[in-house]
Image (cartoon, rainbow, N blue to C red; front, side, top):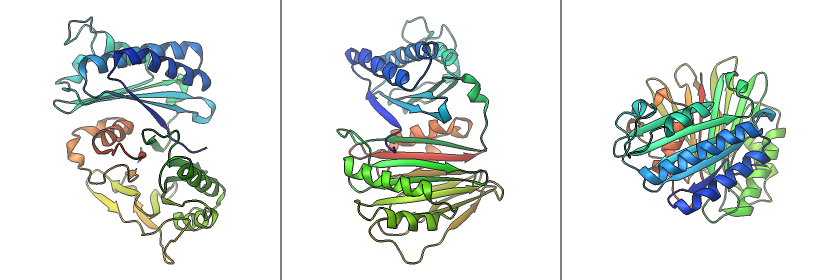
Amino acid sequence: MVDATHTSFTADDRSYFSLIKKEIHKKATEAGMNPSRISALDLIVAEMTSNLFKYSDDGELLLGVFNNGGSPYIELISIDNGPGMMNPAKMMQDGVSTSNTLGHGLGSMKRLSDTFELYSQIGWGTIVLSRVYNDPEKVKVKNEVIMRPIVVYKPGEKTSGDGFTYKKTDKYLKMMLADGLGHGPEANLAINEAETAFKVFPDYSPTQTIRFIHNAIKKTRGAVINILAYDLSRKVWTTAGVGNIALRMSGPVNFKNHMSYNGIVGHNIPGTMNDQEYAAEEYNQAMLCSDGIKTRIDMTRYPMMYKYDVTVLAAAIYKDHARRNDDMSVVIAKVR
């Protein structure tokens, strides 16, 4: 089932922290994480929430649970609008603190995590990323294309009207970001019907995939969709979109905003659509955003971001550009 990839927890009330920890512990157990990894996760959550309370304004914790081909991992993303850090690397050293504590928090989180990143700017805030794998050896598996989604449902809803899915063969990788019309269960039904069609369609072409999905979801509310594929042998991105899913292709020098066609998949799509191609040599990264994310994104706001895990960039876009009255999605794919 396609749904939100992350659950959002507001972390500005200390009395709520034990409930956050309990819920994350429960989700990790349900995912099949082994007890020792869950114990590490409990400690990371405690440190994250403590730091959000002490240093942040409007702190938020995102929890992602990923099956990862049967070897699950938990992703925690701490987001705040606090004062930021002058020297993040120094702050991760044991014994360094700005609040008369022992100063072991960030260092402990880093040691307990299989993946750990900290990005901060003075006056902007801080993002902390932690991943805990059930089998840490899986961290060593390197795929040619990294895909990192953040999909969060509208506050007050129980399910997401946005959805991300992908399909991988020995020849290509194909991804879909869909946004069902409206919110809630009916929008979620539309994106799940789209996912079913996406999974069974056998060909590579994003345009032909959209046409197939269009016929399959005519009894639903419909959706706006962008499909992005990567040819593993040709090293080329191919894409097509209908509606307001934004796609930005970027590389070491250039970036380009891809133009989607007007319409609603399942209701009305253009009679003439074509696949568009981008060479990975020129554009090694792609970012997809739903209309819950404002599309005027200035990447110069995030200096040195190229050094970080792409999830940190996705979290920064979410932090700065999300509309809190909507389902929200940002997906980044990058060729290594």
